[in-house]
Length: 83
Length: 219
Image (cartoon, rainbow over all chains, first blue to last red; front, side, top):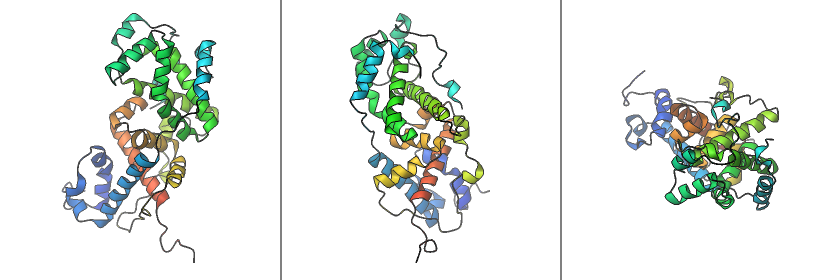
């Protein structure tokens, strides 16, 4: 296994990806990435998925009746019960 | 990592806030949020309603995306807030209030998954799919690539099909926006584990959302 990014294989680079992405580091200048179209495409796809999740899957509003049910349960002393 | 480390079901009932607890509890958000939290801990019903209004969307969405059924998601959201009402006096501000509430909610969701008899026995198992379930790697070969624009329904379906552990991390990080250190605190796992599971979740989604290769396209 190579620790030198210039001679790193795709497997070695991708094994480090969770930590590299999670660290928030700028990977555009990574030596392996700059010369590997395969890993460039992988990283681009993963970034697309994360961005799509942020943009498309917004939090959903619960129905208004839910608070009424919760409030009723609290007022009737059901907050101490478990399902 | 197990749900046993989440807000403890065996904690003593606490219907009224203890002064020492109230004095130190912080929401982790703002002074105004801190004041609302302290009032709620002291039994102020209006303050509790404010807490519900602030957190209801994220808690309901977490339940909905983990369970996939709006009726059950409403039941679980109700259960989470009833447990919150019962336990809010035990919150001491060791973590952000939102993180603490999410831990409580995750515990409620996991209990429901067990109740439904799903194979999810613990989050440990959900977080560690068997090797043949893991996302495939294709070193040295042309990887499948995304089809470009991703539509919401397709993405929602793909997220719903993720194994529960992957799904939970993906929801918390990529949808709800929590950092890995916060997720590690919620799930009592390492930060490295959170990063690793998120990466596997994204790889699995990439596989689900990819363009079929020419060999896969039916004539």
